[in-house]
Structures are given as C-alpha cells and as structure tokens.
Image (tube, rainbow, N blue to C red; front, side, top):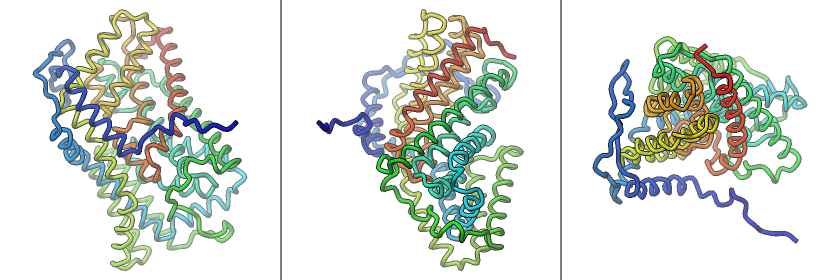
Length: 466
C-alpha cells in the first residue's frame, strides 16, 4: 500500500523563509543567552582574542526594529560579494551571448565523446577542487557557470553542476593543506611552522574530493536511469544548454579571440591575487573589464552589450539578494553580542571529556560556531586562542586542535546558509538552497565521519608540528 509520508527534506522551507527564521531565532536567543565579549588585541594587523578574558556584559537583546535593521546592515556588510556576483553574471552573460562558451563546451564534448561521461565528471570534480585549494573561495565564482554548461551537455542537471563546481571548490578550500585563512591563521596563533603537517592534510583533502567525485557520479547514474529523481527539475536552464547537435560545433576565430580575452583576464586576476593580494573589489573590476573587451571582440553594439548586461543581472539578482540576506544573520549576532558567549560555553563543555572524544567534540563545536561566524579567519581568530590552550589541557597537540577546527569549519561550509560565498556560487548555478541541502547533506555526514577518522588518527600518533 502506497504511503504519502513526507521525507525530511520535504520540511525544508523556502530559503527566504529559512534565513528569516534564523534571524528571528537569533533575536529570541538574544533574550536567553547572556551577552558577553572576549578582550581583543591587535597582533600583526589582526584582532586576536585574549584567552581567559571572557566577561559578561549588559544584555543587548534585539527588538523588532533591531531584527529588521540587521537586514539592511547585512546587505551593507556584504556589498562587495553582492557586486562580484553581479559582475560575474554580466561577464558570463556576455561570454554566453558571444557563442564562445557554447561552442567551446560543445567542441570539447564532441571530441571527447559522451561515452566518457563518468571520467569527465570525476576529472571536473578534482579540477574544481584544485581551484579551491590553490586559488580560494569567492575568487572562483566566474568558473561555476562553465561547469553548468558542461554538465548539461553531458546529460546531467544543474544540481549535479553545483556538486561538481560549488561542492568541489568548497571541499578543496575547506580542507586545503595551504588554506591561509584557517590553517595559516591557526599556525600563526599557535606559533607553529606555517602550513606544517601538509602531508596528512593533503591526504584528507584528496579523500574528501574522492568521496565527492564518487557521490557526483552516483547521483548522475541515478538521474540517467530515472530522470524523475533529478533534483534539478524545473530549474531555469536558459542560456546554459547546447542548442545544436554535437557534430555541428567548432571554435571560430571570433570565439578564440573572446576565449583568449577571458583567459588573459583570469590570468591577470590570479597574478594580482598571488602577487598583490587582490580580493573581491579587484576581481569585480577584472570581470567588468573582461565583459567590455569580450563584447567588443564579439562585435556587439553598445545597445546589445547593455541589454545583455541587464538581462544577465536579472538572472543573478536573486542570488545576489540571498548573499546580503544571509549576511544579516551575522549582523544580528554581533548586535546581540552572543557569538562570544556561544564560543565560550562550547569550549567549557569540552573540559573533562576523554581524549579522543574531546577531539571529535571540539570539531563539532567548531561546526556549530561556524553557523554563527561563517568567516574562516574570523572564526580562527575568535576561537583558536581559546581552543589551543584548552586542547593542551585535554592532551591534544596544537596540530590536532587546528585540524579539529579546520574540519568543523571546512565541511559545514557545504551547507552553511549564512556563508555568503556559498549562496553566491549556488546562484551562479541557479540552484536554490533548499535543493542544494537535499543533495549535499548526506555527503556532509560522510565527509565529517571521514574527517573525524583522520582527526582520531592524528591524536593517536600525537601529531606534532612537522
């Protein structure tokens, strides 16, 4: 007898409702959780928490006006990321209008053949993971739509495209052995050799990406066998699908010019990131320059260029909105002054636990804190000055404590609704957060378990700085 029993993901509300619910919950918690702050000092140009300096302060509960005021403040705080989403959308819209993206992807698929679909999906997963390891997080936003076009050409859906690109970038960045925002800041706080212990972290990152590649291929097989099981049904694919038979695709001279401008622009952007420390605003500027030059190379008129830009903005505007909306959660937490209280009490809860349990629970506590402090470097500066001395009292090496932090922060970034970069990249794949959560959450549990195996191993060998 058939049943209409709902599954867990059927209860996931619309992303707008979900995020507003978290803001309301923060306002409620501001009346329950005592306000408190750690003393902070400037060290090497960064604010660092002084261990043992936590003190409760006068309560700063959020009223109705404060709760809603957090929303425009969130948009103000996230303005740089919001604009890079818009700039990336404009650039991809012009590249797509020129025909370069479709012709390039169509030619690649024609030459490699669709019979190598699984190999291509695995290779793309590792490639995007490598981008996350080497380049960063928001820096890769322009590469996400390319995965969407390629995945649809192979017969996948937009959710799979997000798994290949957004998932791999997040895993690669979160578990990177050379992540400057988490591992780098952690090693500076712990006064350890920078990026020491890279061997174990490299193995952890590779296994995480391998699990993701397996998960992507498994999902692809499932939707190929039964298209009704696709989570991407009904999503907008306009401008991302191949419009002609594969045998008709070739790269024209004009496509080569446009593609060359794109690659040159990306190369300049990467040089600036690694040589001069460029970040969001500089990346946005490069995207706009690529857009104009690519439009001119494609012989677009001023009107055509302008209309394409506005249509592209319309496509990515919902995602840009969600970035600011998600950042409002952080603003509400800061207004209520309860972030430090949550971190302090989670640290206290670890005292007295057995050695291996304390390591895993430390990682879990960082996962919880990550929902309230989504910035990796911000979380490191706020929690590691507390966690490192606590870890030593519990019998954990500094290296294991930083690994626990990295796993807790990096893995939960896969489903963190307050992480602006995640919401931004999902928007480039046109995948709503609720569908992404249905897709990725089982894998989050698998990678967390795998990470904890590595963490327990690090404790068992008394993992040191080398």
